[in-house]
Image (cartoon, rainbow, N blue to C red):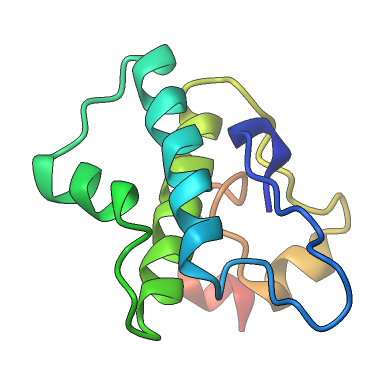
Length: 112
């Protein structure tokens, strides 16, 4: 997880779950993401804010919504100049892995 977004998960001890699959952990990190948005001037739709505040719900799909939000905010961090794109320096690795940020505007045939 991108630490520059303030995301972290605390270890709760043996046999106790923690992490993005645990709603209470997503709620705690949702608060951090809301803070990040406010500090960077990113406006949040009410539905997104409510999702963050609820840890994206108790259903198993909440983890996927949380991941999508983290991915989006990470991309915004790059666009806003707050973090580097993070793509590998090796051109061949970028071609195979399909990196989005930092890849440039190349026709798909160039990567075949």
